[in-house]
Length: 332
Length: 252
Image 1 (cartoon, chains in turn orange, cyan):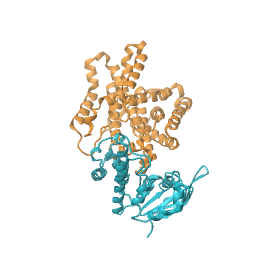
Image 2: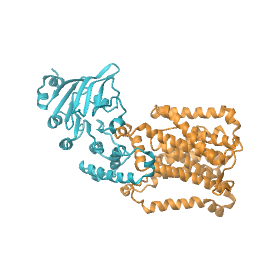
Image 3: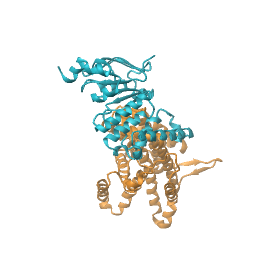
Image 4: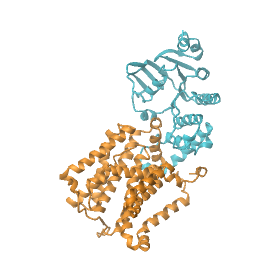
């Protein structure tokens, strides 16, 4: 975990993040110059990668930093997506307003769900949150008057941002949407970093490591579990809204347990509780299945095999391979 | 003068078994009191009721004259109580230094936004906290381990770390649950010295201890529990000769 204790950060660290940022921003042009014929497809995969990275970070706040194995994330993702989809198609709300409504409503739902769910602990909490996610999916499928059920909500407009001076910037091209998704990822990553380091992060980690001792330190464990759960849920709602606007269609199948499995793979095989680990996980496990499409017959076999190899060779996640050797970690 | 801690008629039952039966106990400021008794006599249960980890079935707990009976542990702790646990208890994935910092920060700032934005005031407090944590690590001989994850420390080191952590917010009353259990004789002496030093600085300490030698050496007043009831109270010499205490420990 990169930690910043008031001292200026090591220059090589921030310059590495800067280089990564520049590379990420320039990606559409790089792709265009290297493989112009494939640009649309590659940028599409990059958009998915950015959205999944942001979603996985919001998930890791709960799973990695307060150690509550929530399986409810698809519900909040779905609440945000449906809120944005319905408000933009039926009520004609502008993009920014329906996005914020999605964030807010997902946060409210997470608060209402969290109060009873956090009366459960460990495995019962996991099962309770799983049940909640399944119920949310069933509601989305059957509440046809609102969600149109299996017919899906279609025709969700492309986002357009109001600019100072009254003009509007419509996000219509793929690279433009990629930059929007990248911006969302940056916002989520900054919030993630601020919440998981310094005093706030320390309180979350104390609750994760030893709840009775955290209480002895004057920490209210429930408050910090709820904080991570509600902020994580609200961010998931925002990502859901962006996802719905990007695909212009949103169906109940997008919020099934399969999404949780994807997130678990990204977070645990990338590196649970680590910004870098989750980003690497998202890049690898969103892009990899796409790359493997080159060998369609063996795709899932190769993917499954790779997952097994990672689990066996690096049980703490890929991030643990990136860490400096133990002796060099004294100064972090 | 109001006593620092006052326990009145505390009762705790587990499925019909009475673990603590109408115990009264008073601790005055600056005292070093020991709570002893054979295994299963209800010492730790009493401790857990006082600190809010177990809900009492009857009686009252007053801290500085304020009723804290059955309040949530974190609320009781913030009023100036510190405790350690019988089972060694640290935050395994935090470093030794961070383990101590956690214990002070909650007493200083609750505002989430301020912590998210790392206001200059918080940065200054953090600097002071790091200084205090380093001096406490130095006190218990763990200065060299400041940046090691607490989970990687030895049993004895973790015990010392937990002790230092409890001191971090400078609590008015320190409750120590068997600080000398399961550690080497050298460390028992070290612990004794630390506790005596705290007492000399005027700190109030309530000690639960199984090891008679430790208790007899350092306490001025001893309370003896047996089967959840208080059977004796007094200075070490009187306790040593008390027939009821001898019976509880060695049988008739």
